[in-house]
Image 1 (tube, rainbow, N blue to C red):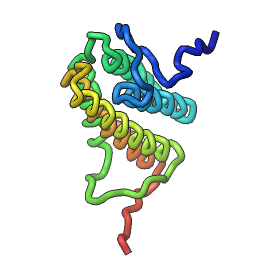
Image 2 (image 1 turned 60 degrees about the horizontal axis):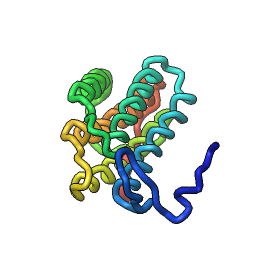
Image 3 (image 1 turned 180 degrees about the horizontal axis):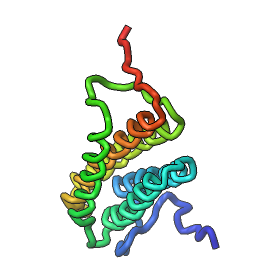
Length: 176
């Protein structure tokens, strides 16, 4: 069955929660934002042809399920090693890319635009998870917060790399 009707009055339950919480709570907002970035990464996987990028995106999706479980109250934080994995990929990308001297206008290739949009969704998810951490009702590990911070950097690097590999020049805003 695809529905239960239990949330019809605007409440839901999370892992290990014996009480209903509002669907507008910080936890449900964070879980929704994490679900949104994970789903959008699924769209990217259907668009990207680079097998390496597909693998990176899939691994991020797997990690986001762990983050969602943690935010829902499951006591299994994301490992610090996952943060290191993102840092390694970002460092490899930076070796191939021209130095950043300015902001860039999103676009170029379709895949680059998708990665850049994913970056903005990831930033929103990060803000929502930070709000949960600050609220203090659910413990959010330092490694999870660091992972979400690196995730947007990874997505930005993949956007830039997608354009670079396609020979598309990054356009800086002219501020006119």
